[in-house]
Image (tube, rainbow, N blue to C red; front, side, top):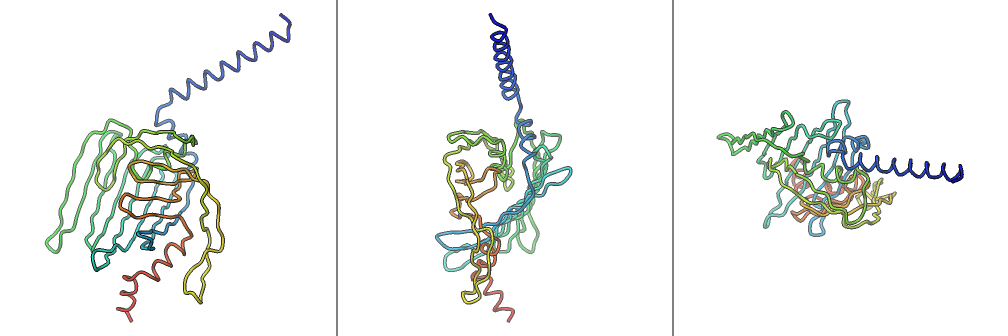
Length: 285
């Protein structure tokens, strides 16, 4: 065999050995190691959403990501006017999830208010294996009810607000891919196994800036951005997310839809037309 042929064989063998080592490393990595690598792609910022129901703009929502030296914090906020018979009631939901820099869940907080009755939930993970859960609900002038519990969790748990980021930050955007999670619902403290499927890919046009139209007395989009998104189907409804796991559109199980847009289009236009906001304004005048 010639010297050139020998060198070629050595190169091919080295390449094959490198592929084998890479495959072994990928297959042997734990879920925690994959999440730690994905955490490097988490960037701070805020996204805003118009909340729609039955073709009407009924509310506003936002997601804020803060990256701190020792932790990552994700805060979801939603406020919407929900029709109940002949009346309209306002519901608010604030969820805050705190993680380590390796995307391990540490604490969560939920504040939910409907018809001025607040419900507070707090939880934390102790020693990586114990879930502590405390829920408090006001029941009127006589006091409040409290429900607390502790239980052992043996699986790696992902909170529902982290579902999209954790699914997408690994960079595997193959259509048909199915991921398996143990999901924690911060509102109830319950966990469940869930499959999430990347079902489709599409391009969305999303408003990213707005200007006020004085004659129409409303905000209008002045610049749009094209965003490629993937459809996730699973326990949280149908979610379209971008490559960083940020929501573009979320069709929720309760019948509401969140659509990413500019802040003014999401919040100011809703506030100006909300019947409850008008009632408060007229009461002050």
